[in-house]
Image (tube, rainbow, N blue to C red; front, side, top):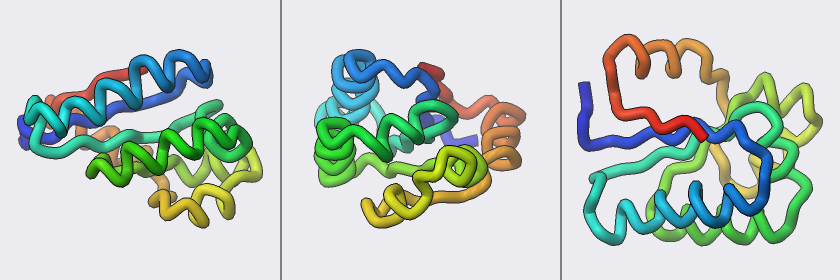
Length: 113
């Protein structure tokens, strides 16, 4: 178990929640050394939000530049038609089912938004 790596499972497609919680917390988590590493997992409707909303894309770039790892569920991205957009933003796109299950089984830090 890695208790220094925070995973944020982001499924809420509300842009205010994205800016004022997901991005704010993950970026500050690294700046303030609350966590050694942080991964945002884009899942479900958030894939469409990221793929279509330029302001959210800008914020994704900011947190990625701050050191937050960004990854997205490939199945969701494929179904929502945004895989190419996400990949063009240097977002890792992969099947997350097994990895998320391992995170849960290992009781690793997981914040669900």
